[in-house]
Image (cartoon, rainbow, N blue to C red; front, side, top):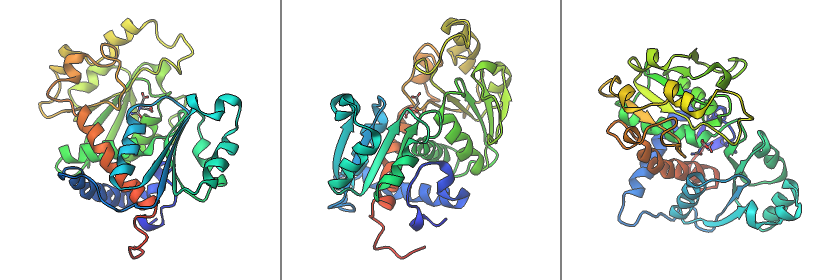
Length: 315
Ligand code: NCD
């Protein structure tokens, strides 16, 4: 699919494979340049309205989308469940129809139910962007991670060995990133306790390994995931201490990493659980770069989906 026909962004699959992904990453370079200007704002979305509809807690993703929309000069509306009529029992359908009636161009949806953003596309003419749905997908996180990594790997992920470590089964970030990294030519290994792996690896272009120490020395990229305690029903590993001892990236393990390794985490981090503070703040870590690049990625996505590219010729 050419980028000009991208209507919604619900999954990494919507980006149209390697070509589409690379075009979006190239676009992001242009928007990153904008964010470095003295006045980091362009009039691309003047008169457009971008709504963020967040049914789950979020700091960085919501602020990142809102910053991106503002840097494109869009008007923004924020809807968060804790202060809305959802508390009075309003359904997702009624909420979307109410927002729709106000006249909007894009809705950024985060929801605890996988598939909720797709439902929203049935109820609105606005572009829908998935900002994380249950355990399903988080495509803009995958884009910002690919963008960050590409810059650290001389422009290409071909042959890059990526280890994604931790709570894979609950992670929409893992699901989107496996697709993303594999599409760009990386070799992905999932690492963690068997109880935190998906029951089936169908649709996961990745290998599985349970011993972190065997994987670390060969990895070009170490991507840590948060242990999602809010999604873990209990009993998946004996204790957090045990988890940290076997799968946490501590200073001793970090000392065995490749000298040019890249350490990533989508945030929020559980410092001292999946990642030690000295590693998170250490020389290999690109965690804050991921956050900064997230704004540029979301500018590129909003620009294309909320009508900034309307005047451009169809690709
Ligand atoms: C992730 C999410 O919400 O899926 N965070 C994020 O968007 N940066 C990962 C997580 O919550 O662990």
